[in-house]
Length: 398
Image (cartoon, rainbow, N blue to C red):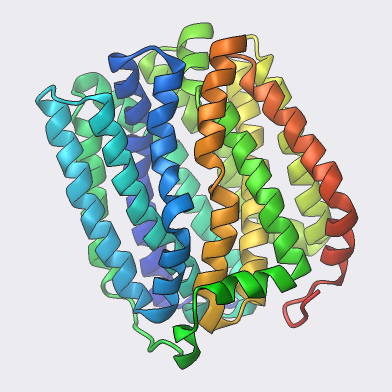
């Protein structure tokens, strides 16, 4: 089996270190928000602020990834995030955190995430052959899941219980170390055609039936995902009476499914093909969402969250690998930015909608509502998705 180059492993380690800190940060933010307010609508505002930059900045960030040094964009965005996370730690340590400051910090960190994510996904095919992209993306997804959901959350919740500033300080340190590793990656001059307008990404994606369909379906699915998950902390801690530390453990249990998905994705695609893998993942997500809303306790909730992590990881790895294989290098940043705009632009709306649904109908309601909507979206996409995936190949546009 061909080996990955050393530059890939530096990227892999940087991703793992960064996401371990992010996992601690992600669990600490809602816990800190809940100490300020118990209103699900206000808690959801903080979560929405994290994703709003994808709606506002994704297209310019994609152009940056095509026009400028992608390695520099990655490490510099991580360095800025280190400063921002450090500022949150100081505010938390001095007891000066407000919902407004927390939302502002989440928004600023999200802006850096937009730049980093577009640049990193466009950069990966520069150091990894196309034939190895499913394995490479699977390993990156696995280490991301391990950090964000497995190691980070229990560590973050434990540190939060000791002192509210600690998980934010950990995230700042992880950003700084990640930036130092990313700065050592090889540089590659940008393609002259990369100076074309931002709209080139829109035009290319609009003509590609498969990626266009996947991007639209992703938008609906992420809207539903955030509609459901925005108030998960309240469902766990208030309805199911999970402790602060237990909430982090619950999220870590969910990561086991994501880890498994990252490890088995290449084998699943080889054995069953991308179409059955995608359809099984999407159908599984819909069913699991309904089950989460009906969970009688923390253990069934953790099992269902793990199943959701497995399905989500399979979907993510397959679709990202397809995009990296099909999109030309000089357009990869802009097409990725359009794809992510469609995929993540509705997340803030989904988050706010989830808060309203939970407030009006109870904390269990968002998950079944989201599950039904995802199932309807999948049924609507099948007439286009099935023939497009059957005829797709890395060298052919549908």
